[in-house]
Length: 249
Image (tube, rainbow, N blue to C red; front, side, top):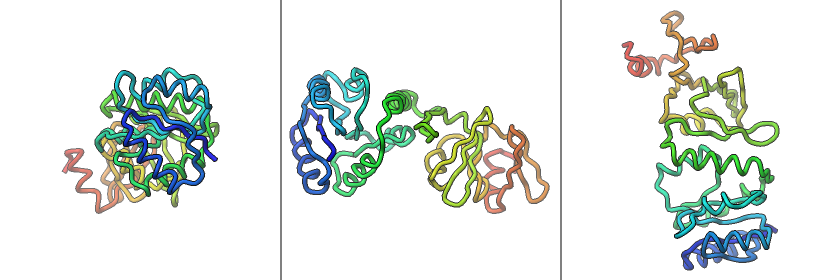
């Protein structure tokens, strides 16, 4: 069972969430609720929950401010928010679990399932919170993105990613400094996450960062050379759009 605390200043939201959890999530045991950040801190310190459902926008102390006062962050968090779709990108970049108000039962079950499968790393939790706050503050000029490492999660600047290449249902992410990460995501998933930045899908198997493009050559149907010397082909169907973006048509 997941010992769980619900924190929200709106009583009807707490009661609705309690009802949905009792109905759809039998592994969740609600041990208490809180209606403010300060009360939430006291309940968390006293009850040592496994999971906290946390409203972000509360008077006097936001959910983020509450978390920053807790040390260590040795529990899992599902943020409950009314943020717009643009701001939700910050949560996706940081791999943070969230639910959009009003909470839907299917999304609730999925979020609890994801959280239940995760182990808690206090270092990762703190880094994740900082990445999330940075992304919300930064306006996505260069968000910090969560990438899995052997010991947990690394949070890297999107601007440090040179290119990504697909291998079956995995994606290799190549960064500056000869760093490489492998994600259990398709390249399409990664493209959806990075596509509104300076990235472009030049080929079925490659997503490049324009900022690391060193050379474009027309030979062999057209290909690009990245700053690390890697040659990447340009698919025929992407060539016109690529040239337009590069103003090389």
